Amino acid sequence: MIRDPETLTLLLDTIGRFVREKLVPQEANVGETDQIPEDIVRDMKALGLFGMSIPEAYGGMGLTMEEEVLAGFEISHTSPAFRSLFATNNGIGAQGIVIDGTEAQKQHYLPKIATGEIIGSFALTEPDSGSDAASLRTSAVKDGDSYVINGTKRYITNAPEAGIFTVMARTSAQIKGADGISAFIVEKGTPGLSLGAIDKKMGQKGAHTCDVIFEDVRIPAANLIGGVEGVGFKTAMKVLDKGRLNIAAASVGAAERMLADALRYARERKQFGKAIGEFQLIQAMLADSHTEIYAARCMVLDAARKRDEGRNVGTEAACAKLFASEMCGRVADRAVQIFGGAGYLAEYGIERFYRDVRLFRIYEGTSQIQQLVIARNLLRDRAA
Ligand SMILES: Cc1cc2nc3c(=O)[nH]c(=O)nc-3n(C[C@H](O)[C@H](O)[C@H](O)COP(=O)(O)OP(=O)(O)OC[C@H]3O[C@@H](n4cnc5c(N)ncnc54)[C@H](O)[C@@H]3O)c2cc1C
Image (tube, rainbow, N blue to C red; front, side):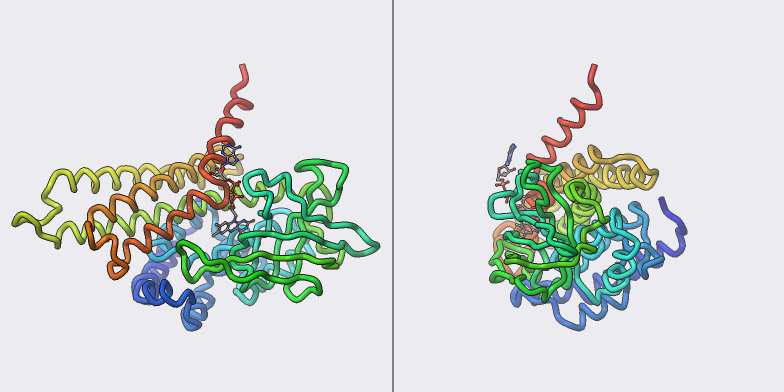
């Protein structure tokens, strides 16, 4: 749903200009230094990018899902690491509070998340619990007016920068699986909370992950999201449904950028006395990429509109994430191929994109997990 086309066009134009003028020129630098420059972070805050999906009542832009994915396409025309810094505030690092938080939790945290004053992180994955997230072992034991948390979370995006963590932990040792899990807000600096070394990753330099370690971390009982035990896994899955649409939108945007770069190169590079774009085998790669991007864009927008109508889009979000992230991988591979030897060299930047977008097929549920979700929902919903 688009509330006001004029306002949205203005926002998309502003983001587009910011991407072209400020972010694209910094891509190589961020890729080399693994740091996003401070002035860029300041600009992101000034543009309101940290609060796009936070409701207006709490200081954000309150974008609808359709508006948010349209913004996501634009933002993703540059290195995914830029988006990653504010994406957790709009997505997995804040949506637990937005969707299921108490009014007091919303009032306390959301305004600071919306401005980027604090970065939110989402801590579900553990060393022994990834795709099988319901088997997580981190525990939260009630003790008077507090919970005491113990455990380790792994690969947590923006953990080194985070001011708060949405932490999924087991409040009942007796109840195995999802129903024994609750969601908590844990603030940085709470005694017993520590971070591992920053992970060395294949790509997305400038976006940081690390372990988050809880050793007798005592938090107020009021930080139980929604004030209800045993529904934390459901909260996490609702957050991920939305997150999957955002990753799908990021996949579309990144693929659009890589296709644009490949088109430019195909026009400029000459072999056998002609621009390589005149060879039909190159044209096939360009055409297949454009077709698949178009299909993914349509899927993402359709799922986003359905979500705005209040429909359950668990299946559509999984379909969009599966197709768009796999599509993005194929487009990245073709783009490198079109660049030939230059595609393999750091100087041209396309190999950086190739590495960066590999993650889209892995986090917020691997492609195999999306397939399982889609098939499970089909078998459930279309029972004879
Ligand atoms: C850079 C990065 C950032 C991340 N950020 C976050 C974050 O902010 N918060 C967070 O909580 N997590 C985060 N993650 C974790 C991410 O969501 C997990 O890595 C992902 O869900 C996969 O879990 P795993 O790594 O344990 O792989 P595993 O679950 O061990 O899977 C290994 C392989 O087995 C396959 N597999 C597993 N189960 C099945 C099955 N039943 N059927 C078929 N195939 C199966 C998988 O698809 C995969 O191919 C991040 C990961 C990375 C790399």
